Image (cartoon, rainbow, N blue to C red; front, side, top):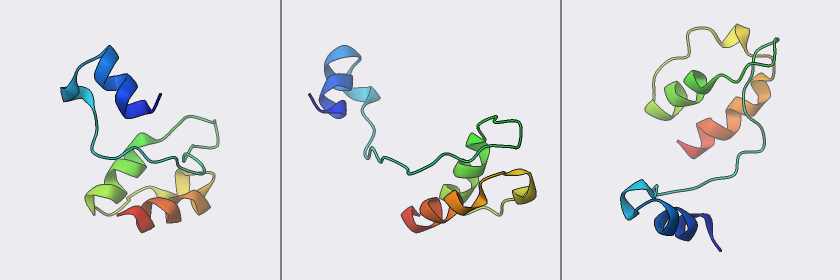
Length: 67
């Protein structure tokens, strides 16, 4: 079953996002903490203030392309 269909059946149609994308990697810090704020800023078109704190900065290019 597709993820959208599963969400629609198990939650409600209001919980189904417009897009579901599989990212090759998720940005994280040197301590392996996931940094969702970095992705949120990129997708919102905002400047990323602390890009140096991201250990795997190469994954950010995917989110720039999606935007």
